[in-house]
Length: 81
Image (cartoon, rainbow, N blue to C red; front, top):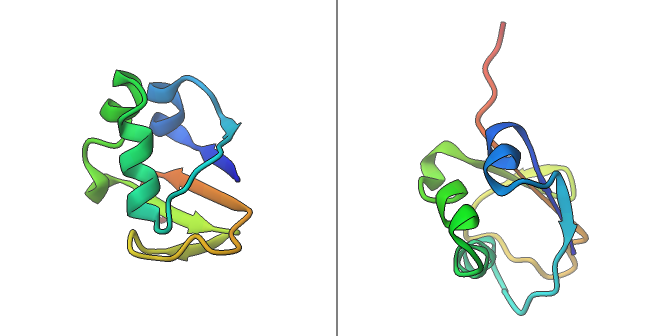
């Protein structure tokens, strides 16, 4: 699965995207796996209230299933202007 990181999430992790092999069944499971990798992931995902997620370019929730998902993106909330 392709994992994309945007804005300060990307800055904390240090890469804009990566291919991830996972056994996670939900977004929350994937976040837990990523946080266990290294300190930079743990820091980036330490406050999930400050991160939004999109599955195949559709906004989603942490309890969403990853079945059939090809791409997941993590990004801070957007503001209008």
